[in-house]
Length: 133
Image (cartoon, rainbow, N blue to C red; front, top):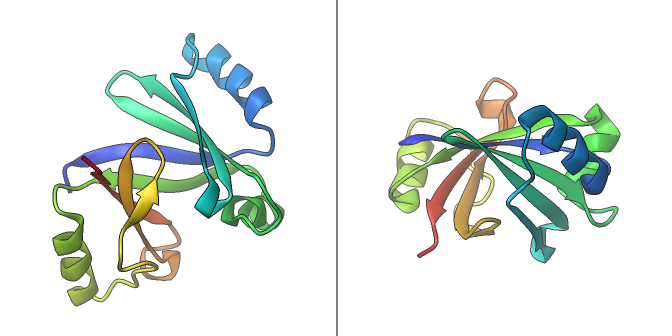
């Protein structure tokens, strides 16, 4: 794993949260994007070399909507940049981690993504990200 790619924060209202985090960071988000297949609308902020991703569920079956219903707004996941997502999935499976989607799927911000189940990572949802280029 190369670095923390971003931290994902689940929010009820993306527009309100964009204003809140604009106040915190002193600058606006640089991108809003919907990932229809995941039922999520995202917004990204750059903070120095780091990124924060705000996530709002777009329907009642969205993992974000369900997360907020269960736990409320807050940190949803930590994403790590990887160079070769398929070899990382293989390595992590061999280490005994539970992989939620072995086949990478298209995520926001032009990334291929795979998630590790929180049951195998001390309760933290881990996302692996590789540039889709």
